[in-house]
Amino acid sequence: MQKETMIAENMKKVQDNITQACHKAGRDSEEVTLIAVSKTKPIAMLQEAYRAGARDFGENKVQELMDKILMMPEDVRWHLIGHLQRNKVKYIVGKVFLIHSVDSLRLAEEISREAVKKQVEVNILVEVNIAMEESKFGIGESEAMELVENISKLPGIRIKGLMTIAPFVEDPEQNRGYFHKMKQLAVDIMRKNVDNVSMDILSMGMTGDYMVAVEEGATYVRVGTGIFGERDYSL
Ligand SMILES: *Cc1c(COP(=O)(O)O)cnc(C)c1O
Image 1 (cartoon, rainbow, N blue to C red):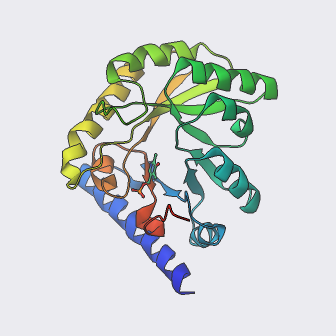
Image 2: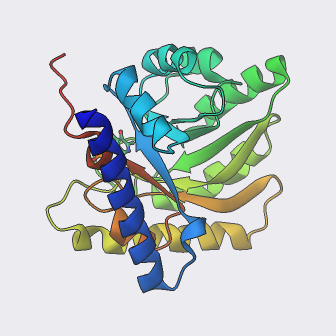
Image 3: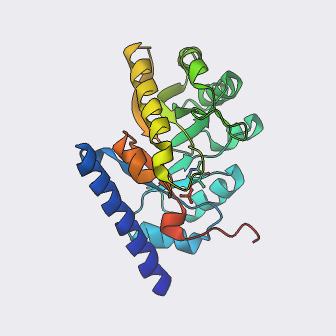
């Protein structure tokens, strides 16, 4: 009971912060969806979050995602937020609501092939490495437009927007400029009016910086620690 209360409370706190950030930016809080990032967490904690109202869950590993899908109610929307290898695409196409982490044409081609085979439409985001960090996946800002145009020609795949993982910083204000750039990039791409491409979704902001991300235009924030507590990778 103790933990259940804590997760529910955390979710409420994060939701309140999102609402506050929306007010500050003159946005409608309905525009922002909180994704509960449940990677490494046991199913009981996901169920607690579900009971507290969470319907969008984010996972970064395909195998863990597959296991959890089987154990959670069918109305959960699953978000793959981690790097995706081409040989794992076949497991998740048709199972997840949104793939956030497409950063190459080769990966998109694999998703497209699988989508056509299964006769489904796959919604994706293009992951942008906005700070050009060497340690991070994602396409560079300057190559994003070309990648979007190339992916848009593939059958079975629909680009819904952009995603970024901002640098790990002490002060979230340090990431404001990157979030602002992401919004600008989305607007620039939208203006090109490419067939099959929408820029409705901007997935950015994590526990340390989601309020700033919302102020700068995020429509999905991905919060793990702020809901479930610290992760223990030694398990
Ligand atoms: C783990 C993870 C998050 C959540 O991180 P927290 O700091 O725990 O909120 C968000 N996005 C991605 C891509 C992640 O891998």
